Structure formats: C-alpha cells, structure tokens
Length: 308
Picture 1 (cartoon, helix red, strand yellow):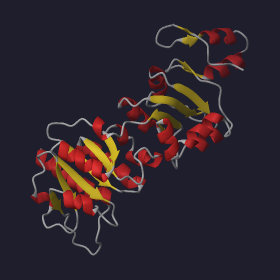
Picture 2 (cartoon, one colour):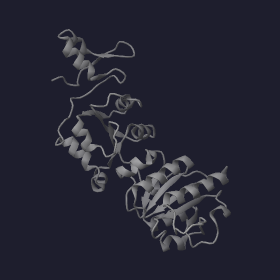
Picture 3 (cartoon, one colour):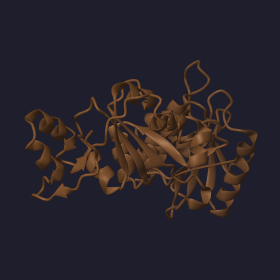
Picture 4 (cartoon, rainbow, N blue to C red):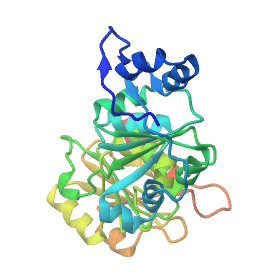
C-alpha cells in the first residue's frame, strides 16, 4: 500500500512526489490512483484512508465532545471549513485536520494552511468521518485544536474596553450567537460567569461560526469576575427587567461591562448588588423576557452607536 512518506520533486509551483514519477511508469491505473491521493495545490500527500469507526484516532476525536476530556488534554473539536479557517487565521493551534474522502474541494486552502501549521492531515472514510462530525450537514472537514486560554489574567484590554459578561447561560446556541455579535461589535472580551456550558463545547463553536477564536474569552466564578472588574476599574452595567433607566439613557462610552443572565432567572443577586448601574430593555408585549442573545445584541449595539 502506498504511504505518505515520499519526498517532493520541486518543479515550480506544483511540485510532484518523487514516488509519482516511479508509479506512473508502472501502470496508468496505478498512477492515476496515486495521483488522486495527491493534492496539487497543497503539495501534500494524503495518508492512507482511515475507515474503521473503532480506530483509536476516531475514538479520541469523539472523546473530545466531553468537557472532562477537553479539559484534560486542553484540546477541542472544530467542525466546518469556514470555522477551521477562521481559527487558523486567529492563530489557534491546529493539531490534526480530518478530511472526508468524499470531499474533493478545499475552498479555504485548509490543506496548505494545515501543512504550514505543522498539523497532521488524516483522510477518513465516510462512516469514520460521520462518527466524528457533529453538524447536521457536515462539509467534510473537522479540526482538532488546542483550546484557547480562558483565564481572566490573559485578557488584554483597550483604553476604553467594552466587555460582555454572560452569567449561567446554558444553551450553546445562545452562547454562540453572543460570541458572533461580540465579534461584530468589536468587543474586548466575552466572559462566561459561572458557566453551565463551557465555551469550547463543539455546539458553541458551531453556533458561533468560529467567532470563539476571534474574540478574547474567559471563564470564571462570579466572585473572580467582580474582583477582576474592580481591579481594572471597569463600570458594571447589569440588565434586568426590574431596573428603572432604559439602556439607551446611560453613557456607554466609558470602560464598561455589560452583564446579561439566563432567560428564566436573569442575573444573580450577587451581580445585581455589585452593579454600578442596572438598565432595562423596554418590552411592550405580554412575554416577560427576551432571548439572552438578543438582549446582549441590543445592549452591545447601543454601545457601538454611542462610541461612533
């Protein structure tokens, strides 16, 4: 069986494996099969196809869906070419790139980027790829990345920071949507306070469209977050239906943290008591709460509007 340890023969922009020169002289069918395995645009020879769902690599990738395993290895899964490309562009460390053998398109140049990053590229059979993919309609690419830092101490703020604190939000879709909005609004950081679902959950990554890698993130307890805010002299503005001021009536041009809580119970009494200001979003209907990602978007874009 042909292996992927052959050297390259430089012939300009599209080098050809030395092994291809040999096999092409043996038989046209053999040479065509070998050449199909070689990606001309990436200068990379694909490894043998992994087909068994019981392969240790497949079991390892599936295991990264579990938070304990992600924390233990400091690794995470990213499903989708667009998300993988954004992660690489954001300087996330790619360890392994899995490609479905059914996928013959590389619109984002992932094979080249993976090779430049020193990552291993592994081609998977259809069943094996379906085992590790977690999207409803996977596009044939899954990456294993090193987890980004989630330490408060690693956050770097601008002179007038705009930060989002999300407390005890559980649904990955809401977390992902907030990350996408935060990226679009140019926030300094998103901090998950007392997280129920961690930010590196594969479904959060999927819902964020890769924005998880474009926005500085942190996870911490309420006590730790409040201490960090005081240390950095940042005003805490908490959203609650019980507040009197409307969010658009306060000055959000100064260093500010906008805090939102999960829909059923809202922010904790600890955060509300520590807040410098509480604000509300006017609601004219009969429903008593907004989706938390919508609330965050409304507050963030008021800050963007005020800051010009």
